[in-house]
Image (cartoon, rainbow, N blue to C red; front, side, top):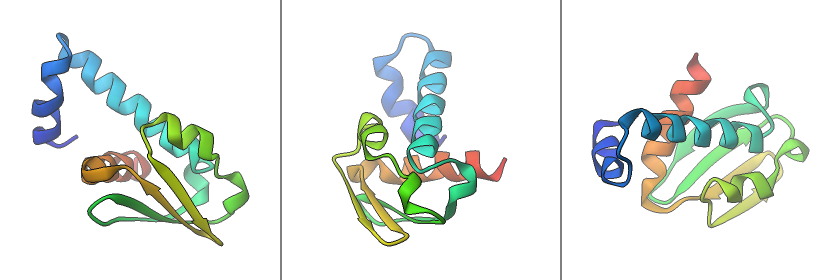
Length: 101
């Protein structure tokens, strides 16, 4: 998790461990919403959207992605865009870190 995200969000949580736990839970939910680790080919982002290529778009669960704070989900073939707004960079970093492990 980036330091800036942690610093900005820490004002909402008294316990910093709780903050890290919540961010990790969101990353796990995003992964589940995208059909699991094995379904994710590539992760990119622009200013407001998480852009992904997935193996099987039928495994993507839009309702789960929306529970993670997504304003919307756009799907075209194997290409998925999840709209998170300006916080997308930190979401991408957390997702990439999780996928690399």
